[in-house]
Length: 636
Image 1 (cartoon, rainbow, N blue to C red):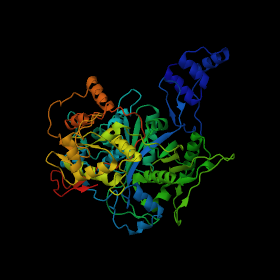
Image 2 (cartoon, helix red, strand yellow):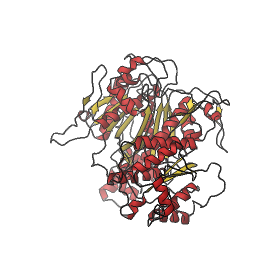
Image 3 (tube, one colour):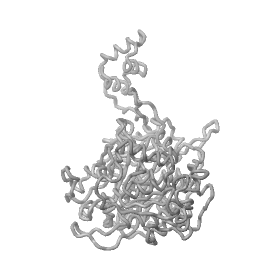
Image 4 (cartoon, one colour):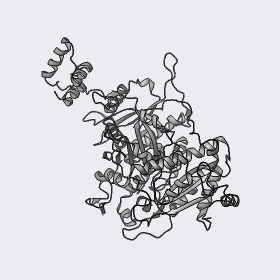
C-alpha cells in the first residue's frame, strides 16, 4: 500500500493508529500487529451502511506528514459587513439589540447599508478604470470592497500578508470562498495582460477575479444560492486550511441584488447583505498576535436527500457536536435563519453570514439578543461543569435545507481567555526623544488626505491628547508599527516623525486640510521649524532628522525606472534592516518618499495587531460603461 491507501484505510477505520503509523514510518510491529497489517492488506472494502459516519474533527496535518493531528479550532481574526439599515457591525449590533424594531421603517430594497449607493464605487482605489468597474456586477464590487476592508481590519494588506504561507512556503496564500445569489451581468470585462477575458458576472470565476485583483495566491471556490451557501463556503475553506493549501482564508457572501423589497413573515423587509470573515488556525493566530473574535470548533454540511428537513438538520447538529466533543447542554445559543429574519429580513446567500455575525457579536459582548418576539437583550453568563469549572460560551449557527440546497451547521466558541495584551513598548532614553516614523500611503493624493483625516479623527482625537506620557508613547509606537506592517504600499506617500500622539494628530489634520508650507511639509509649528534651522530638531543620536511633527509627502505615480534601490537584493534588505535597528528615521523617510519599500525590512519583532480604521474609499457614481459620471467623490 502507498501512503494514500494507508491514510484512506486509517480514516475509514480499517487500520488502527499504531498500524497506520507503523506502515507510514516503516517500523516493525510485533507479531500480532504484523498479522493485523497483513489482514488489512487483503481485506475487502467495507460494505455501505445506512447511517453516515460522524463528521471529522477540525484537524491540521503535521509538516512531516502522517495522520492529521487534532487542533484546537480555527480563529475568526477579522470580520466586516454591511446589512440592511446597518453600514458596519456596530450599527448591525445596535439594530439587533433593538430587536429589529427599526425594520418596519424600511421602504426600499436598497436600504442604508449594503445596498445604499450600489452604483457608487472607487475604481481608482482598486486599480480599475471606471469603464471596467461599470462592467462588473454590483455584487462583485461590494465583495471587493468588503474583502479589502476585512484584510485591512486584520492588518494583512502589507508586509504581514506575505507571512500567510501555504504548506509549500508560497506567500500571500489566502483562499477566497464566496457565496452569492445569481449575478445579473454577462458583460465581458477586460482581463489582465495574457489572460483570456472573463465574464464579469460569471459566478464561477468570481473568486479567481477577486484573487487576481488583490494578488492572493490560495485556492478558491464559489457557492451559488441558498440560505446555507455561506456556511457551505466556510466548510470548504476549513478543508483547504486543514490540507495546508493556504495560510488563511477569506469567506464572503453577498445577498440579493438591489431591487424591490421582500417582506419576511416576521415583518422585516429583505435587502442586500454583504460580509466577509478571515480564518486562520487558532494556534497560528495567537502566535501572530491576531485579534480572535471567535473560534470555529466544527462544521457539518449535507444534502437532506428525501429525508425531512428537520431530521437532516438534527443529524448535522449531532455530527458537529460529536466532532468537537461537546454535548448539547454545553451550547447556550442557537442562531438560525429564523432568528436572523427579524433583524435583516431575507438576505439570500448572506443568511448564514448574518446568523454567524449575530453569534460572534453575542459571544464578544457576552449578551444574548432578544429572541423573535422578545423584549430586550440579557447578559450571557458563562456555564460551569459539575466541578464548578468555568466553561467557554458556545453557539451554533444552523441553516435548514431548502429546495435544492443543503443544510449546514457550525459550532462556535468564544476565544480562549487571556490577560490583557500589552501594547508594544516604544523606545526609551534618547531614542524616545527622536520620536516615531509614521508612514502612510494611498493611490492618489485625495485618498491620502482622506485616509490621514480618518486616522487622525478616529484614533487621535484632538480632545484626547496623551502628550509625553508613557502610554501615549506606547500607543504611538504601536500605531507606527501597525501602519508599516499592516497596510499596502501605494504610490502617494507621506512620512512624519512625531514625538507623541497629539503631535501626530495635529500634523495629519494639517496635511488633510492642505496646510502645506513652501518646503512641502505640513503641520510643523514655528517652534519645530526654528528647532530644525538651529539643529535642535535635526540629526540627533538616534538619526531622526527633519522637522518633528511635520508631514513630508511624495506623488510617485509618474515615476519610472528601478528607483534608488533594488528591493529584491538581499543587500538592500540588510541595509534597510540596519537603518531600522539604528533608528535612522530621516534616512528611512527619504528612501520611502523616493519610492523604496522600507516596510518589508522592519525588524520590530512580534506584537499584537492594533485594529485601525480602514483606508478611505472615495466612491463615485458609475453610470453606463464608457460614460463614467463626473460627480464628486463620497468619502467612506
